[in-house]
Image 1 (spheres, rainbow, N blue to C red):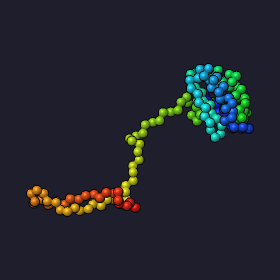
Image 2: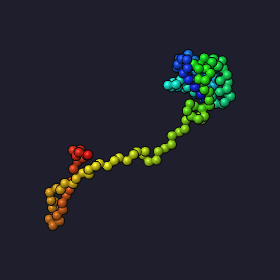
Image 3: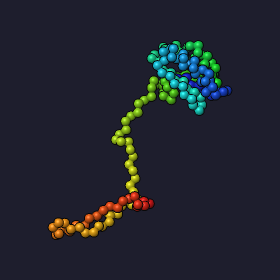
Image 4: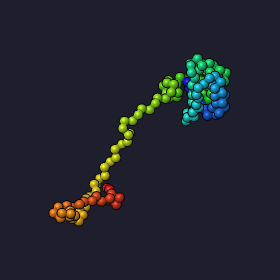
Length: 146
């Protein structure tokens, strides 16, 4: 479950500094499994996870939470209370990333100029009758690509 507090007559980060400890303490003593306080450009988001919705409702109705929400920077229209994590659409946890196909790497572009082949001096086999020409590929280290 999430409590989202927007900036109003004062910064929501000041509100979080004043009420964050009591919100966390109350959450832990109410049986919270996990909690997180995120500061954003528009305010703060306090996320807390409980096993059951009944535990969340009990936490939501505690004196510490009611006082904290009553003293929010904009208590009338600057407080959102919703299920799930922030920006999550109501699910209890973020979805796991799907594996990438293959290595996940992109193909590299081919060089504009292919390395040229240089002829080497003639080479004679042991029999002397078979004459072959050898070639080598020059290093690209000193070749300029355009």
